[in-house]
Amino acid sequence: MSLGRDIVGHRPIVSGCFEPGREVLAFGTREELFEILARARREPAEMEKVRDTGHRRALAEHTYEHRLKVILSSLA
Image (cartoon, rainbow, N blue to C red; front, side, top):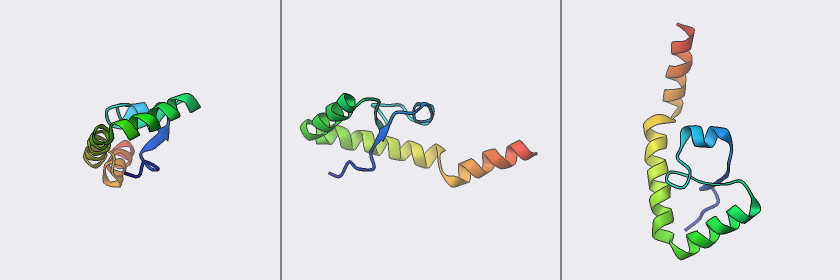
């Protein structure tokens, strides 16, 4: 399992779009990053579940089409 794109630095926008720990793996400190990596090694199926849950939410709520609709509705 490759985690490179699936772990993100915690930013307010992340928790505004996804539920950290359930839909995205976000860290605020180096120690949190190491904890996530250790957990991923111990529980790869759980990490895959987080990835799939986040992917489904991204497709349902966070595509370019969704963003364009928000932008266009604000112009009307």
